[in-house]
Length: 345
Length: 264
Image (cartoon, rainbow over all chains, first blue to last red; front, top):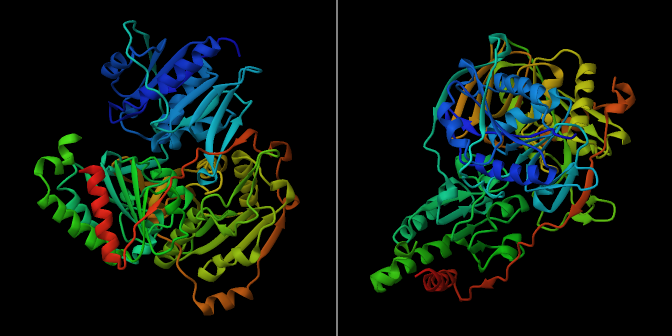
């Protein structure tokens, strides 16, 4: 295994670098240091000069520009094929990818083609000193436990959760940029892209305050109360958004971009108000790091109260409007300067 | 095209919506003790069954639900028949207990080979127990068919599958020739409720039960999970201060006052 490098797959979309790539390089540098091996970054696209230059100052020894006209937009069939060629050439011992839709599409299939397997959504990476293999820590059972996996097959593939690893810092020294042109046969493309539609997606990660509703809201119309509360909280906070738990999306009450939890957004706002949410663990892991948590639920035994700072055991239909009215009252009465949390954030 | 054959892979798992802490960690044996939890069909696989039923309603076809594991509960999985699946196949074997993701995909592909002809394979995007999220795409790779990950809508037409695939900031409309495999996300909608009549009828319908030995599986490729350690998750609990008051309105006002003090 000596001298086999660590490969980081750069997160790019339509020619733009996602800065989360630096988290992967950060994690990769640490592992490479322990193993005494080189670290390489793979970038895929049709024109990568700018991105390659940018990324070359973050501590990677080599930056592979995997270039082909057909890699300009993300097509899993071709991206897998291109990386398969690169991996066969440079034979890495570890491949690090961001836990994103891109790499969940590519990683597991690429690993399979190379006779290995992927551990997904890792939150911790260590080297086992006994055998030099990667110890991969991953939340399982919705976050009820952390499992440490080890795989003897090489390369060892992982996708890593965002916001967990420390991003690599910029250095004075520059890594070597290596061209890696690939020839891709159009017949490899078996899934045809017809069009991509951008939606006015809500990015809950940016919110200072989230008012989230669960199954206990009872139906789509109940979300009006939450929207109203969010509206009046906007007087005091920059970004106030309405979110929800998974059952609400399954029922079609609220669009999926509002979903918070393991399979939705992972958030940590200053204030999280959970309304009619029972608190399944897969929801809790997505919001329990919020600074202040308020829970409103009719059932005092709901798990949500176990992670809340403030609880109201009652009917939200009567609690939320009075919370809203009183908030507005206090904002009106109070000294304007002390009222505006906006000024502090 | 009418009458396409749809296969849905559905996994029986301990209820992932159960309250925090009901799944216990057996540190010594590096296993989860889930005896306190009821078993359910993985919610994402229920979404996949729903997607299959929607296709059947719109374009016709036959829906087969395939479940693989150890100690499967046929009364639970019969739900698939009650909501409208045509065929339910359970593949049971003690050797399928606690196997890793690639092994599950291997065993599923062997079961699919025994089923024979198919046009579309659907799986949930991930299972709520180990949350690996790659059984589906690896299965597609093993079957050697076009594979589409994370669908929020699946339709078939003229020998093709049309999928709205989730991508960052929106969705992508993609299309592949059948046979193909699609992994389904919860945006397609929750599984419909069966009518009482369908529940009663489904109890009399046959469930096909196969054993591992019925499949052409290379048992050397079936491996257990290589877990070196199972750890407790970080403690998320806080001390909750409950609002007091005679009426809900009073509690709401008290909450506003406290929050105002904290954030004002």
